[in-house]
Amino acid sequence: MEKYRIDQSKGLEFGIYTLADHLTNPHTGERISAQQRVQEIIELAKLADEAGIDFFSVGESHQEYFVAQAHSVILSAIAQATKKIKIGSSSTIISTSDPVRVYEDFATIDLISDGRAEIIAGRASRIGLYELLGYNVRDYEGLFEEKFDLLLKINEEEIVNWSGQYRPALRNAKVLPRPKNGSLPIWRAVGGTPASAMKAGYAGVPMALAALGGPASIFKRTIDAYREVAESNGFDPAKLPVATTGFFFAAETTQEAMREMYPYINEGMKLTNGNGFPKQAFAQASDKRNVINVGSPQEIIEKILYQHELFDHQRYMAQMDFGGVPFDKLAKNIEIIATDILPAIRKYTAKK
Amino acid sequence: MKIVGISGSIVGSKTRTAMNYISEEISAKYPEVEFSIIDLAEYNLQFSDGRNYLEYDGDTGFVTKEVMEADAIVIGTPVFQASIPGTLKNVFDLLPVQAFRDKVVGMIVTAGSAKHYLVAEQQLKPILSYMKAQIVQTYVFIEEKDFHRKEIVNDDVIFRLERLLEDTVVLTETYQSIRQAKEDEYDF
Image 1 (cartoon, chains in turn red, cyan):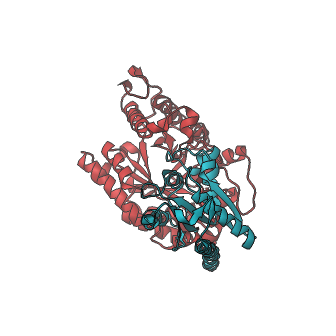
Image 2 (cartoon, rainbow over the protein chains, first blue to last red):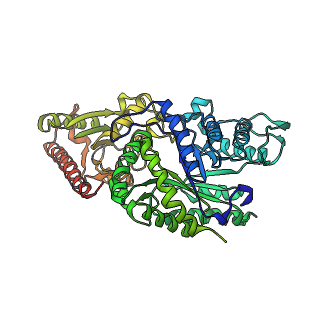
Image 3 (tube, each protein chain N blue to C red):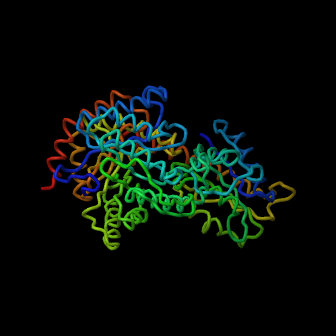
């Protein structure tokens, strides 16, 4: 795990990720400016850093209702504004970027942040960016696999010799600057299915798994599949971190948290995905076995510990700002995480 | 209540003729219903390429959004090669997996022969079920002999169309009120 800067003696890492969605607050009907949203994301990262949270990441999105098209630029501002927190992308769409440029950017962010940068590379759940950036969506799989491989190669080798189908060949190419400690933790972003997780297993790379809804137990199957495939391909699963990502919202009581959170999720999904979140399904989020971490601090602690028991994962990443959540609520959530949730989780998940 | 009628083929007139009856019946008896017909013959739809329906533009974007915004859908379809036309299947392919969740779907099937009666049962209903529709179980099956010069000449068919519409409206209201009552119980 050292290669990926994970120290299990400190317990399950707690991270916060944002997709930098830019949506109307459904409770007030108001939408802040794009500039304010970007600045609040940087501010949120600062609060997370001060609260002792382990990781903060920003995802790349190119469609309407999002502001992190240039996510690495936001991350570099965060690198400068924070001191200890690890920072990364969630995710970087490697398929539609040049891995050399991505690596240059993140190695630079690593230098700015004094060795805190990571990349989570994904394939995009939406495909509008292919046209925008000049790629053919028919190459969806080929583009990702080839460019992700190249990204990993650049991370391992300072002088790169490489040729492929979607990018001109590299001959004795020096990709600079190098990260502070020689390499970056690079994760593969995975949707919910075992088939997708197995691809991370074949490559023996860390996996960041989206777990947006439903029972936690179905994601265990995906994690098991990942570790089995990694092992049968000669990698040691004990050295490969797993992160899960999902919705999070804490309030004094579970009822209050559910009441507050539902409109954000439902209205936000309607606008960004075209389908709302059914109340019936959301009602099940109050069950400990459901993967959505919404509730009172105590309920959330129990849920995360239950998930850790199932998954034995190394990092949980919370998405708390989806759907126009105002900044004061985000700050309140950070406070709850710092005072109630982090101490309990670290206490019960630290490995001796 | 918003009902969208889909006339599922780009050729022929029987399905559209039946859909016109539905349209007239709605304006006569259900003034509160907002109704529109999407006749696929009047639109130029691209084939589904797997993207989210919000990302299509032009006719394809219009049709997918119109269908997604409906409370109920009346699908009119002819039978081609013992199944639904590819044009109609493409509309389903363009939509998300649970596109018909909380929607009522009624069906009108036109065919050249009575031998096709079970096509809707075996080919259309499974698709609608998979997409989470509340199906009006009884569909209206209309044969060649029921039409003459783009008119329906069999009163029995007209009565059945009236009943289909009544069932569609009543079931939509019923499911909406059941869901509303259930949602009101939740404390969020």
